[in-house]
Length: 222
Image (cartoon, rainbow, N blue to C red):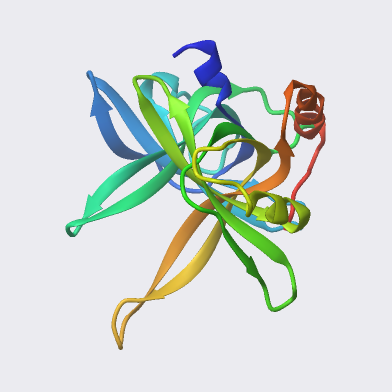
């Protein structure tokens, strides 16, 4: 993977492992495992984020109830379930870092392209929100499709963007639980993952802002 593609998608997380490792898949005799990472929010609640890690990175730090710091990428893939295709999101670990309590525990930077017309809405509490699907290029002619949410002024800005326009953002990965009615008698509880946008980046000068976000203890929109 070249340097530019590495910089398209950068994640930094610190949290507590809240599940056992489960085998995910194997590529060229390299096994990959999944676990759930509980990452604190400013509001003292948590986001529970799915993580995928190679067996080559697993050591005594990767076990239930351990606090770890990881860096990597937020990736997507399509999973076939009951004849339907589902977009699955996970943090792909590239490095295990030293724990540092002074750094923001949840930071993501994405450089991508609008791949679906943004959806603008207003909540009952008059908060303006735009839902954005961002295509982020990866090596081997692959792309990750990352759902994002913009708020307020940022929401008003991105709602005017067209499919194919470039967009760079800094934000955090957030999780939420919702209920989906599958029949008259059955309601399923599901998890959704998306990027809460903190800032839209327009040029290289905004890298100073990225560095400030990473070095702050917490920056989030709860």
